[in-house]
Each structure stands twice: as structure tokens, then as C-alpha cells.
Length: 144
Image 1 (cartoon, rainbow, N blue to C red):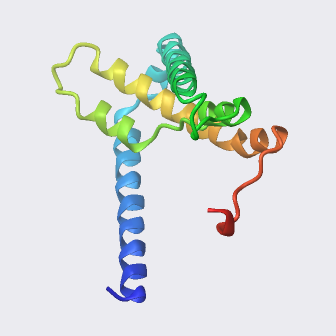
Image 2 (image 1 turned 180 degrees about the horizontal axis):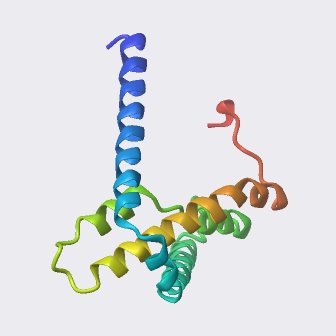
Image 3 (image 1 turned 90 degrees about the vertical axis):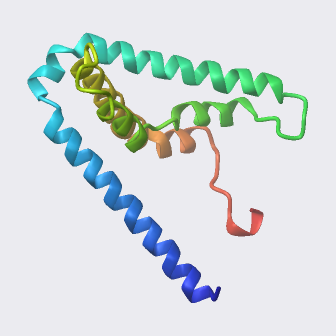
């Protein structure tokens, strides 16, 4: 496969991924009632905290397992790994894929939407600030 063909395929897959994400978020927009979301604020907050706590536990557990090996990760980098656990299309797709007769289906969709919204806005928009505050630099192509 030529370099040009490879680049075109990469661009095509990137576009298709973007398109699929747009469709999923459109479906969520049609499925989520903002008043209902506000009414489920406590459940959404619990879901957000649970996702962050789970991310901390997993990152720290894996960090402890590989602490002495060549893949050891410094605490500052683990903090970035914890904060960068963004959720998106898969979370939305799984929630929307629940059967219509699932008990509390709308609550689960609202919780998933709240988690995705929080991770994309709060975590996504503050990630670069966290990286700067921790003094971590992006790798250059030469160092990869």
C-alpha cells in the first residue's frame, strides 16, 4: 500500500469515527431530557465519583504491579493517567443499547450522559493545565 493510500485510509477512518460519534451524541441529545437529568443530579454525581474512584484504584493497582519493572510510572504521570480517563462514544452506545424494558433505563442513560459530559468538559478542558502544572512535557516525535 502506498503512503498516499495509507494516508487516505487513515483520513477515511478518522472521518467515519467522527461521524459515528456525532450520530451517537445526536441520539443522546434526543434521548436525554435536561429536566430529567437535573432531577437525577445525585445519581449522576454518584456515577461521576464512582468512575473517578474506579480509575484511581485501577491506575494505582497497575502502578503498584509494575513499580519495579521497566514500565514503572512516576506518580505525576499516574495522576495524568487518572485525570485523562475520558469517556465518550462507547459509554453512550452501551447506555443507549440497553433494552427498552430495562428497569431504570432512562436513569442509566442520564448517568452515562452526565459522566461523559463531566469527563469531556471538566477533565478534558483541564488536562493540559494539569500537565503544565506537573511540569510534564509532550514527547517529541524524535523521542517516540
